[in-house]
Amino acid sequence: MRHTQPRHWQLGFALMCAAGLLTSCSSSDDDDNDDGPATSGPTDSQLVPDDDQVPSDTIDTDIGTVLVAGEPQGVLYTRPADEEKTNTCIDTCAENWPPLVTEVTTTDIHDPYDILDRGDGTSQWMFKGYPLYYYQGDANPTDTTGNAVNEAWYVARPDPFDSADTSLGETLVANGSTITAAGDPSLRNEFSRRTLYTFEDDTTEGQSSCNDACADNWPPVYADMGAVADSDYSLITRDDDTVQWAYKGDPLYFYIGDSVEGDIAGNDLPKWSVVLP
Image 1 (cartoon, rainbow, N blue to C red):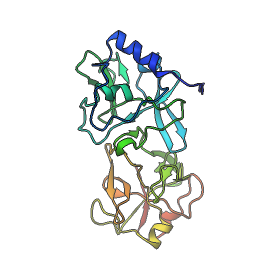
Image 2 (image 1 turned 60 degrees about the vertical axis):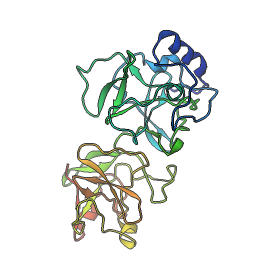
Image 3 (image 1 turned 90 degrees about the vertical axis):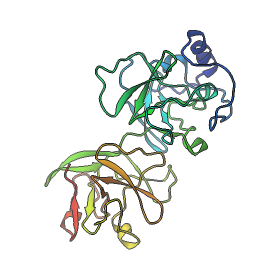
């Protein structure tokens, strides 16, 4: 069940300090993290979720599908500009961005999740190599006010891909909404479960040759700011500086002629092929 009542971060942080779960409870400055105090945020119960399992739960928000954890749930964030598997958020940063700590060992953990030793006696969940945090400015379960703070912090998102059965067998499809070329995280293509395609003319790895009218008919699968590549899924920069998802090096597209899950009308057109995972 989702709860919408405000949460009081001050009490939760005080409990964290008393328990010794943070490196420091000082108010000293930390680069890129003096984002201003918030009046509410995650409670102490969120910092160690009751079941303490892999934080794979998601919710749909105004800016798409994001990872959440805790009870009541809170949106999770990463700082992908950091070096992977490093703890750079301490002191004031950890006050504004409470880490998602855990007592789980690495025994049963698998990609894209892992555990980070914070160096202060606590461990923290990581997603795709980046530590996971709450943001104290989020007061409600679907708040994403920490997204793009300092152009460094972004909501943690699962890869927007899945597979589905079509007349050609199992094909790659979108999972959830994807951002549009405009770049506004709230402006999204509702192409969830639509078939994905690759283009034969994309002969240079990491580059798309489908622009202008081509891109109108074959919308690229744009990536949100802060998206993190994983396994076979990579990120490429288009000629207009937008970022697009690629699969095994091949840029991914929708076809405007498909309207529902299972449609593969684009596969009948020259040079275009559905993606078989």
